[in-house]
Length: 107
Image 1 (cartoon, rainbow, N blue to C red):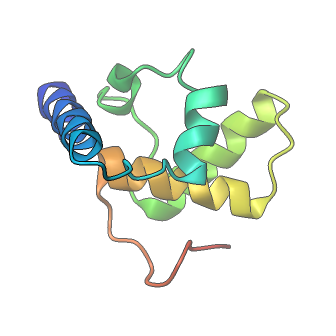
Image 2: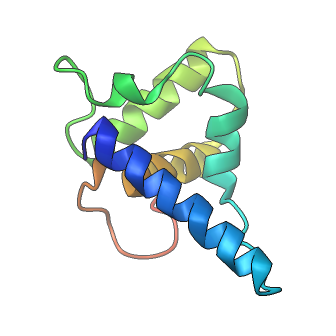
Protein backbone atom coordinates (compact mmCIF):
# COMPACT_ATOMS: atom_id res chain seq x y z
CA UNK A 1 0.00 0.00 0.00
CA UNK A 2 1.40 3.37 -0.95
CA UNK A 3 1.13 6.51 1.16
CA UNK A 4 -1.39 7.83 -1.37
CA UNK A 5 -3.58 4.74 -1.10
CA UNK A 6 -3.34 4.81 2.71
CA UNK A 7 -4.50 8.44 2.68
CA UNK A 8 -7.32 7.41 0.36
CA UNK A 9 -8.28 4.56 2.68
CA UNK A 10 -8.20 6.87 5.69
CA UNK A 11 -10.31 9.43 3.83
CA UNK A 12 -12.78 6.73 2.84
CA UNK A 13 -12.97 5.52 6.44
CA UNK A 14 -13.64 9.06 7.63
CA UNK A 15 -16.38 9.50 5.03
CA UNK A 16 -17.99 6.22 6.09
CA UNK A 17 -17.91 7.35 9.73
CA UNK A 18 -19.48 10.71 8.82
CA UNK A 19 -22.16 9.01 6.70
CA UNK A 20 -22.91 6.53 9.47
CA UNK A 21 -23.24 9.36 11.98
CA UNK A 22 -25.54 11.26 9.62
CA UNK A 23 -27.78 8.19 9.48
CA UNK A 24 -27.80 7.78 13.25
CA UNK A 25 -25.40 4.84 13.25
CA UNK A 26 -22.35 4.88 15.49
CA UNK A 27 -18.96 4.81 13.83
CA UNK A 28 -16.98 1.63 14.44
CA UNK A 29 -14.83 1.85 17.54
CA UNK A 30 -11.07 1.85 16.97
CA UNK A 31 -9.29 -1.35 17.93
CA UNK A 32 -7.07 -1.55 21.01
CA UNK A 33 -4.06 -1.85 18.69
CA UNK A 34 -5.06 1.30 16.83
CA UNK A 35 -5.50 3.20 20.10
CA UNK A 36 -2.13 2.04 21.46
CA UNK A 37 -0.40 2.96 18.22
CA UNK A 38 -2.09 6.37 18.07
CA UNK A 39 -1.25 7.09 21.69
CA UNK A 40 2.34 5.88 21.86
CA UNK A 41 3.81 5.48 18.37
CA UNK A 42 2.38 7.91 15.84
CA UNK A 43 4.39 10.87 17.19
CA UNK A 44 7.61 9.32 15.85
CA UNK A 45 6.33 6.79 13.34
CA UNK A 46 4.64 8.63 10.52
CA UNK A 47 3.17 6.53 7.74
CA UNK A 48 6.38 7.09 5.75
CA UNK A 49 8.37 4.84 8.07
CA UNK A 50 6.30 1.85 7.04
CA UNK A 51 7.21 2.24 3.35
CA UNK A 52 10.89 3.00 3.57
CA UNK A 53 13.26 0.72 1.68
CA UNK A 54 15.14 -0.36 4.81
CA UNK A 55 12.09 -1.60 6.73
CA UNK A 56 12.79 -4.52 9.03
CA UNK A 57 9.28 -5.97 9.05
CA UNK A 58 9.19 -8.46 6.18
CA UNK A 59 6.37 -10.72 7.42
CA UNK A 60 3.90 -10.82 10.30
CA UNK A 61 6.34 -12.42 12.78
CA UNK A 62 9.07 -9.86 12.08
CA UNK A 63 6.44 -7.11 12.41
CA UNK A 64 5.67 -8.37 15.92
CA UNK A 65 9.40 -8.44 16.69
CA UNK A 66 9.67 -4.76 15.68
CA UNK A 67 6.61 -3.76 17.71
CA UNK A 68 8.08 -5.58 20.73
CA UNK A 69 11.48 -3.93 20.16
CA UNK A 70 10.11 -0.39 19.91
CA UNK A 71 7.78 -0.70 22.88
CA UNK A 72 10.81 -1.83 24.93
CA UNK A 73 12.87 1.11 23.67
CA UNK A 74 9.98 3.41 24.59
CA UNK A 75 9.66 1.82 28.02
CA UNK A 76 5.96 1.19 27.46
CA UNK A 77 5.75 -2.08 29.39
CA UNK A 78 3.29 -3.71 26.98
CA UNK A 79 2.40 -7.35 27.48
CA UNK A 80 2.23 -9.88 24.65
CA UNK A 81 -1.44 -9.16 23.96
CA UNK A 82 -0.70 -5.43 23.53
CA UNK A 83 2.16 -6.25 21.15
CA UNK A 84 -0.04 -8.63 19.17
CA UNK A 85 -2.86 -6.06 19.00
CA UNK A 86 -0.58 -3.32 17.64
CA UNK A 87 1.06 -5.72 15.17
CA UNK A 88 -2.37 -6.85 13.98
CA UNK A 89 -3.54 -3.26 13.59
CA UNK A 90 -0.43 -2.30 11.58
CA UNK A 91 -0.74 -5.44 9.50
CA UNK A 92 -4.36 -4.68 8.63
CA UNK A 93 -3.76 -0.97 8.05
CA UNK A 94 -0.40 -1.05 6.25
CA UNK A 95 1.48 -4.27 5.62
CA UNK A 96 -1.11 -6.92 4.69
CA UNK A 97 1.19 -9.86 5.45
CA UNK A 98 -0.37 -13.30 5.80
CA UNK A 99 -1.35 -13.64 9.44
CA UNK A 100 -2.12 -16.75 11.48
CA UNK A 101 -5.89 -17.30 11.75
CA UNK A 102 -7.78 -16.59 14.90
CA UNK A 103 -8.36 -13.52 17.03
CA UNK A 104 -5.00 -11.87 17.68
CA UNK A 105 -1.97 -14.04 16.98
CA UNK A 106 0.30 -14.41 20.00
CA UNK A 107 3.79 -15.88 20.36
